[in-house]
Image 1 (cartoon, rainbow, N blue to C red):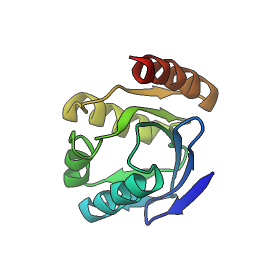
Image 2 (image 1 turned 180 degrees about the vertical axis):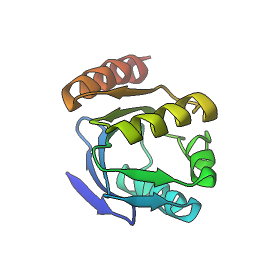
Image 3 (image 1 turned 30 degrees about the vertical axis):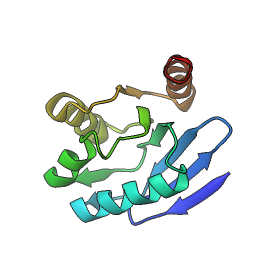
Image 4 (image 1 turned 90 degrees about the horizontal axis):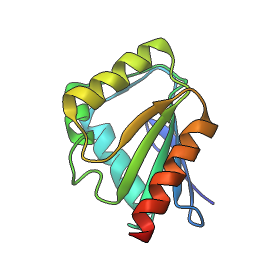
Amino acid sequence: MKIFRDKISELTYSEDDRVLHIKITKNVIISLDDIIEHFEGVKELTGNKKYVALIDTSNYFKMQPEAFMHYSLEKANVNRIATAFYNPNVANIVTINFFKHYFKPPIPVEMFESMTEALAWLNDIKSQSLTA
């Protein structure tokens, strides 16, 4: 298990199951520089291999438009197979839906009430993608 912390989150990565678990920092405002630094850390943590992202959004956060744009780029998500957000509060539901429908990320993105539901979906996506 590998752990990395940046300005916006704490990341834990399991090489065995290729799941990157991200816990967003409470009340963080995510800038373009923050998201670029975040994805550099992700690349290092995952060893530049294919993975799925499991993101705990129980803490309130804001994202600047430039950060949303970068987060939706294919080059930022180069090895990410899918993203599952879970535990969203009402404000984060609006933020995630806006991101998903306006910026249209190049990978599957879904939102779930629980980590169990999110992980089940990610495992299904992962099994299809890694065996194809």
